[in-house]
Length: 339
Ligand SMILES: NC(=O)c1ccc[n+]([C@@H]2O[C@H](COP(=O)([O-])OP(=O)(O)OC[C@H]3O[C@@H](n4cnc5c(N)ncnc54)[C@H](OP(=O)(O)O)[C@@H]3O)[C@@H](O)[C@H]2O)c1
Image 1: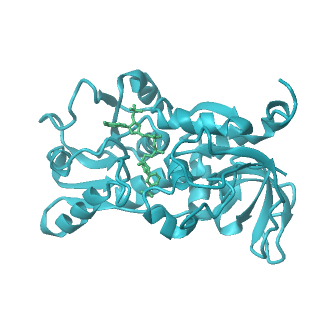
Image 2: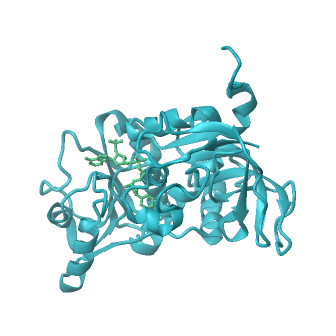
């Protein structure tokens, strides 16, 4: 099968990946073989690609070199074959979910991280959902415990996780304020945010409204600023934020928040998203009810995976970036052929 392959860790996608013919994965007893029609890119893609911060290598992605062929984690496609112990999935089923090495024509996926594809989404749209949508759902529902009528501030509302979080918080009945850069204000408003703060011009912690819940997804604001914008009993959920930290990856803020939380009225916390089929089904229900639509910035063919990752790293993406694997035959140049 055709797949994107990386043999070493690097933080620059351009000279890292090659498109190669490799063996199809063989599904284990509790896995299905998926013919991948689309995958997607997120900040985790860059972390797995680069092996940074270093703890990601200890988390099973390979100490000295990548354990998996490529850093793809999301997929949407069609079940090609099922493992001996699999029930509930059959060849021909259209599915979406999480796996490894999904920048490829085929991937083996555990049934515990797979669900049937939302009927009203294309494969490209469905591939955008699993990791970012699941993280947003857990941030809003499990950790923010957002209730109808609450004021919710979503910092990083224009990104992969944030574009889902805005819509899920709105579907929960919250009054949502999104924070993003100037070029993406209209997009965040179109996602359903009641108000939008352009972080290049305004400060969300300037003494204006205070929020019952803050989801901190981008920008690495200091804890003191986040707390200033939170009601006295408010809840802060730190989802992430990119830094150059090679060892802790900027998680010092998360650690300080968890140490401080038991001693103050506000609840400050963080989490590592879990990948599970129940949340994929919950997301599918929201999507099929018309409450959630993936915001797709653009789709790249498989051979242009490096450009897709670069586009995300440059901070240009509005919502999600998709890798359209089914566009492969027309797009991947034959090595050795003249253009
Ligand atoms: N806890 C978990 O399990 C988990 C799971 C998934 C992701 N994450 C983390 O969550 C973070 C976001 O991931 P993503 O895939 O959504 O990334 P993304 O698509 O790149 O989005 C980043 C967001 O941060 C915003 N941002 C950048 N600089 C900012 C600033 N100075 N102030 C306010 N907002 C700013 C961006 O807004 P503009 O583009 O408008 O500038 C954008 O909305 C990453 O750090 C990722 O590692 C954590």
